[in-house]
View 1 (tube, rainbow, N blue to C red):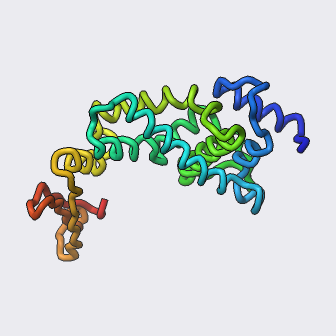
View 2 (cartoon, rainbow, N blue to C red; view 1 turned 90 degrees about the vertical axis):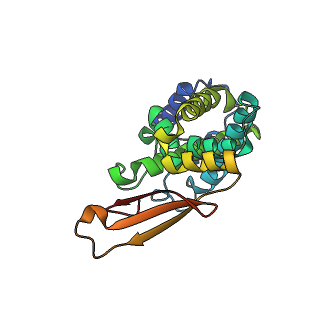
View 3 (cartoon, helix red, strand yellow; view 1 turned 90 degrees about the horizontal axis):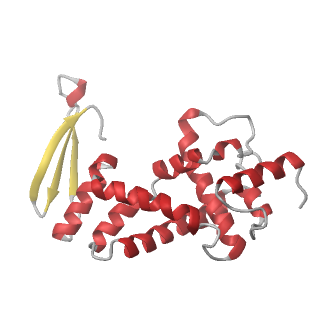
Length: 217
């Protein structure tokens, strides 16, 4: 397929930002689709490639965790990976490479409220396109591995900084091989909005903690 010169330049510029050369075995048509929002094309858009990319980033993260931290409990791997491949982190990486600049959409720019979700989706779609270009990680591992390693190291140093719930689950899985349960109750009679919801966390019939707040979160 022949693309307008401006679009060709956009795709090549993005690959250069990832450290890939123009002669890399990239399927440019797939890459273009990975950067096309469903609003711009109902059929040739990033949704299917996003599905592939989701599996790709989870696989690479799993391999890196097993290689870099061979003595960690399996429960820790799952907890760390869930944060490393979360939409928030993937969106940050997508923003780092400016994926929103290359995304084709109907109706102009992305709304702020949905920008991070779309960036995460597009990031996964780009991974899917690169993986399908060669059928392996050769176009992905070199530039994505350092990002995963850095993020994993930060999470291991302070998992609670990223996600208190995931951090708690990582601890209970590592120490007790079990997940906590949560009980949330609405208190309509509460005198202040700040204490409308009351939550408790339990493990093996033991209450680990409780708290109140204005929402279930």
